[in-house]
Length: 100
Picture 1 (spheres, rainbow, N blue to C red):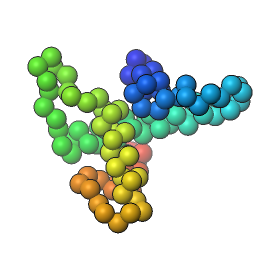
Picture 2 (cartoon, rainbow, N blue to C red):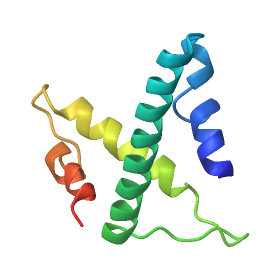
Picture 3 (cartoon, helix red, strand yellow):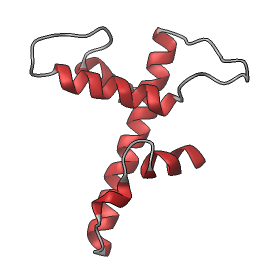
Picture 4 (cartoon, rainbow, N blue to C red):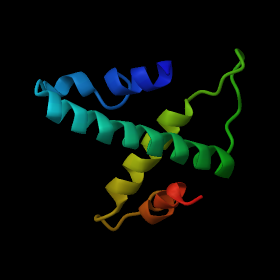
């Protein structure tokens, strides 16, 4: 729960910066952000399975699954229309995170 709260505020989506005050619009925005959060976490799990990271001295990985997934999605979206491809899965491959 704490990871999701941090992701929505300062470590990913910056939800407060939207300045949305209408309840209906805030509900819709929150729903979309929650779906994006889940997608990032699923993508982070895929990335961890594809290329595991070493744990640091305190026993935790250097990046959370959310952060790994968000970074992978950002790379894939950036690569969509510009021809140059970075290493990692394509956007279509990341969509497969939702396939059981």
